[in-house]
Length: 112
Image (cartoon, rainbow, N blue to C red; front, side, top):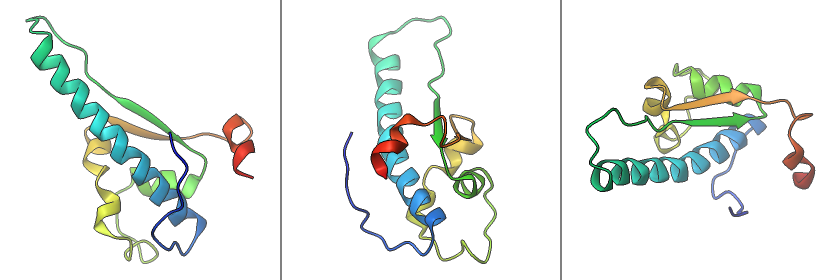
């Protein structure tokens, strides 16, 4: 894990959260691909192999809706296409983005 300032300018907190989500999922997708390669190359079992999925939690409801609903809206049309790279994984149900309350999230204490 790492802490890094964002290299894009966000116009709202929703955008800042979406940029952070996109950056985190970029690394998750790389790990998912690595696990898929390991599963097929090093475990040549002919039975059914487990499907690799990821459940992601986000504390911004607008960001969760933007990640799960792929319609372009006037307030989100300016977002770069490179931020939407994980959308087809959400459609395939390999990645799920769910809301978590900030009251349940202990790590949020360290960001204030």
